Length: 301
Image (cartoon, rainbow, N blue to C red; front, side, top):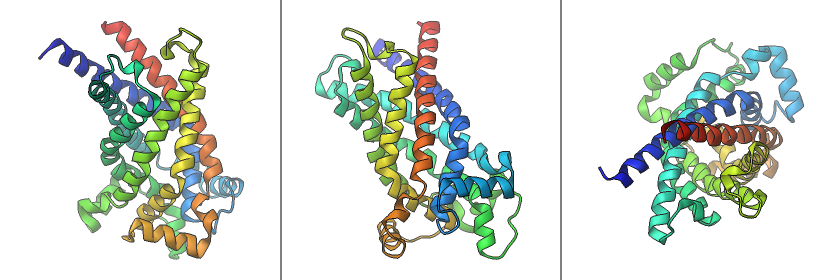
């Protein structure tokens, strides 16, 4: 292996580890509001706003059990997604830099960084879809069973995964994959474009984007998250409903049905809770990612 290949492999491993650390930090910060988002998306008739959703959830399920439902699969989903996402993002940055003849990835334009994120999201979506499906079903399990007049079972992610495999096979775990691609790939184009744009704007003349400090890094990450979710939210509503219900309706048809029967607002139900959650969790994600990457580089270089 050449030195360049060895260096690229080392960078990919470091990005993978740093992405995992960032993902774990982001989940613990943002999980309660993510739970409320999923409930509001899948059962808008029960939860007209985030205050009602939070109050009812805590009253009926308890603070920890209710708001942190699906934390284990959320950790699995986010660690799987972000470790692959950041490793693939770095690899695609290098690929695009080589194609464009740019000597260093730090010199890529924000648009080129956006395309790196777009391509990276294809690979992370494959890991994300099954784990997020289990997470969404756990988060909305009480409402799903009550709607059928049944008492919700007390099962965890492992038992639920076995149940899905038994009834629907492996394809059952990839319900909503098309919606996931539709959500993730354009979303991460704007996610990384926004992040790099904010870092570029916030740096002082002659200062590297990597040296802007923790507060500006958190702000840049938060704005990246807000940009992502504002753009992809309708696709996420459709994905959540497909995954919770196990339905097989094509994504665009279901989106049209929701718009026709429930109005445009239904495609944005839960957006407020999501934007608050994502600003904090994405800020923490990038802070943990950037500083873990620096720490590992300083230790191995």
